[in-house]
Structures are given as structure tokens and as C-alpha cells.
Amino acid sequence: MTPHLENLVITCPLSPEKLAEVKTHFKHVHHVPPGSGVVSKEIAREADVWFSNFLGIPDNLVYEDVKRTKVVQLTSAGVNKALESPALKSEKARKHIAICSASGIHVLSIPQWIIAQTVNLYQHLYLQAFNLRTEQKWIKEVPQLPQGTNGRSLYGKTAGLLGYGHIARETARLLRAFNVNIIAANSSGERSDDDGYIIPGTGDKDGSFPTGYYSTKDAESFNSFLSQTDILIASLPSTPQTANMLKAEHLALLKDGAIFINVGRGDLVKSEVLLEALKHNLSGAALDVTDPEPLPDNHPLYTHPLVTITPHTSSGVEGYFEVGADLLLANVKRIREGGKPINRIDPVKGY
Image (cartoon, rainbow, N blue to C red; front, side):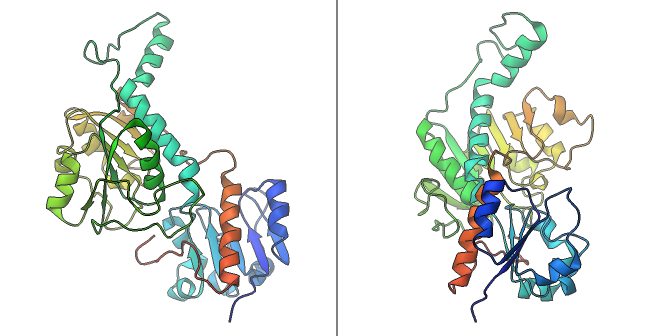
């Protein structure tokens, strides 16, 4: 029987305009944004749908409080924190409730961060700005780099996209404007269509942008991928398979002068491994995620002259939760019509 999905609980921020729009699609809507109090058990027991941040259902609730719930729509692509929430930890909860990621909405933010950081590292903009600000002098050369190397062109370079989901596909589309060659590595080593949530005008639905696909499960294939790469861009989730996937021998295979960008999860590569690679063939790194995270005070990555770091904020642009609400409404519409949920995650795989 097709669920009615009448009652919605929202636990993330939402503009008054978007909240008013969302309310037209449900019989009852309870908006309990961060800092406004807790969701009572009475409200939770009537909820059919949750629209929540990366933490999932609030920790004061357990599965017995949300047995009516059919859908949890997250505003994050990562789901590991939500799966740890008491209400969603049990096998019964995960079987009964469709936990859906927000994969697809980040194409309006994270890929642009990647492009900005790629140009930043290639043109050494962060070093030039730092030198002029601290010295307050008209310094044309970058003392931290060999003389005459104030910048490089992206033209003709090869970007290796480690993971080829929504974020990577939109990044590939944007990089092609610079005449950058695209290759991709995933678990299968094969092209696939994007059958998830796609914002019009973004991405690479049929997976045709990469000139080659490589498998992370085949050592020879993965090594070939790395050896061709000038710009390594990682957007992988955190799973047992991806934790510490990149080791010193992998980074050593990258082209001399390669850069590394990580917007997935920090546990992909240990900080010590990354710091060592920056002494050799890596010419720079841009990190929105780190190992560990948060990065401890006074960690050497903070002050490394070849590294830029943001505190896991690449997705948080203006209107982020409103775009997430569009996905929520699209998902609820599909489920009400008898379709399969968009972005329903596999709790075993973790994505």
C-alpha cells in the first residue's frame, strides 16, 4: 500500500518562504530547528517523514518512538553519523525506515569549491596574498617556491576523480571548460549512468566525460589511474573499504607536481602520509576534510605553506537547506506515487 506520508518533522534550519511551501505538501508540519528545543516523543510518534541534518533523528529518541516513520531525508551526503543515532541503529529500524541521503544537492557548492581550490593551488594565489598581506610590500615572486614559478595553466592537465558520484560528475563538467582531461576511478572500473537526484544543467548523467575508467579494487588498474593524474580529487564516503585507502605508495605514483584535493572524508589518507608526500612529488593540497577531524590545535597541516584547509564547510552555501527541501518534496512525491525512494542508502555499505 502506498504510504500517505502526512506528518513531517523538520529539525534543520529553513527559510520562512521554503517552510511555507513545504507545509502545503503535508497535513501537519513541526519545525524544530537547532537551538529551539527538543522533539517530544508525542510529536515523534506521529511523524511519517523527517527532514534532518547529518545527525539524523535526535538522540533523545529511540526506534520505539518513531515506529510510524517511513522516510528520513537527510541534508547530507554522508550518512555514517545518522546511522549511529539511537532511533536508526537497529536492524529493524533500517529495514522499516527509508534513510535517504542528500546526494545530488551538493553540486551547487562543493564542485565550485574544488574549482576554486584547483585554480588557487595552480596559481599559488594563497601564497601571493599571504606574502603581500604579511610583508605589506609589492612582492611579485613567491619566496616559498622556486624562482619563476608563480603559476601554472590547467590546460591539458589530467584530473583523476577518485569516486564518480554527483560531486565528481559536476566537477568534471566544470573542469572541461579549462580543457582538462578527465579520468575516473570507482569500485567497478566501469561507466555508469547517474540515476539519482540531478539538478537540471549539472553533472554527467551518462558518465561520458571521463576518457577512461579504472577500478580501485584492482591494484594494476588503480596504479595506472594514479600515474596519469596531475590533479587528484577525492569525494569518497567513509566506509571500511575507503578508510586509509590512499597510502604513501599511492601518492608517490602521482605525476611530479601533482595536487591533492579531498572533499570526501578525512580518513581516506593519514595526515602523516600526506605531509610526507608534500616533501616529494605533491606540490599542494586543499582539504575540506582531515585526519583526524576536527584537526587538533597546532597541527602541522595548519601552517604548511603548500596546504589550504577549510573546516568541512565546502557544502554550506546560501540556500543549502532550501535545495535540500526541494529534494525532500521530490522524494515524497515519488514515494506517494508508488516509486522507490531517491537516494535510499544501504546501511551495510554506508552509502
